[in-house]
Length: 124
Image (cartoon, rainbow, N blue to C red; front, side):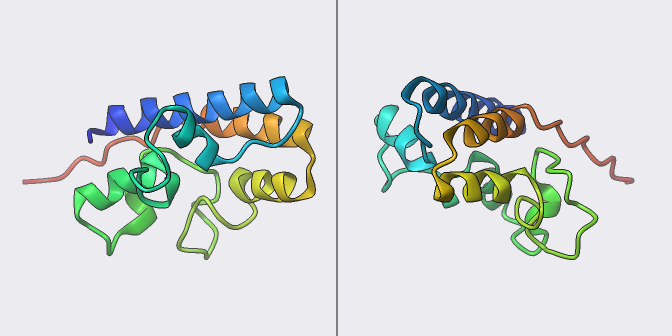
């Protein structure tokens, strides 16, 4: 998977989650997206996340989230998982658990529009 494919799929998934959450007036989870597109849970990307799958396919698991193609806004936190911590993803997960569909939809839309990480230039 290319970086552009990962980002495009990330945005498409989270926009769908936001739209469906608003339409159904209930919090929609990531697994429901993969069921909707016919992938199912078994063949979904790692952690049900195109960005995580991209990092795995890059083969540099030691770098983990430093290779994530989007910026979660938590990169300065001490947590190794940038999508976790006090960022939009954990807030979205809390809203889903609490059944706050309006907040979940707003956060899903925010996640869909996260900025792209710039490529690092390597010397050589």
